[in-house]
Image (cartoon, rainbow, N blue to C red):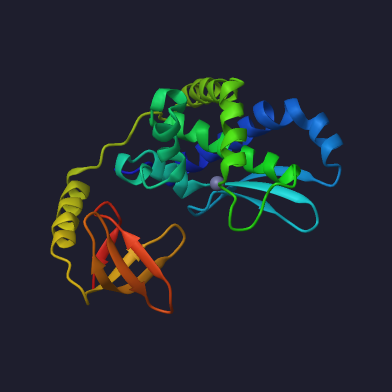
Length: 234
Ligand SMILES: [Zn+2]
């Protein structure tokens, strides 16, 4: 059973509040001095997309997608996200990828993009660069991650929102093992549909690698996916 969307939305809303209170507010005065042109806000999105948008009129807007929150409660979908992999890769929160840890880290990740934008360090095509990870690391070292995690756990607990992984039900387990078999049986030339962050893609299998399958997308471009990807053979 995946986390109900209403609960995912409430958690995304909570992330917006905590980003305001714990990350932005304490730095509001210095950010206003550093970048008087900017206006900040955080909002809940209905899809998966989770990002910082920088508008030409100076708005810096963080979006937390409801379906991103839902994904983070599912062990299999969670590990597809860079924000989950960063925890094991850099050892933040001791590498714990519980939903509450990955959500708190997601807030820090998006806020590090905001700092990057304020400092004029955001360059198209290389937003996840060394300077970005240094900024993100500094937020963790300053205790922002731990504070956000604790407050998230407190408030979610107080309003009855869950904090642990949702284990997939029998139906979902069966669907996943069928998909793993289908993955193992894929051959060059097969037609597939893949579930992406915001939309589905269709394409043709081009190559079977050791851990991934590469496919040519209809309309151009290439995509690689693993047995954990949400796909179906057409
Ligand atoms: Zn990012």
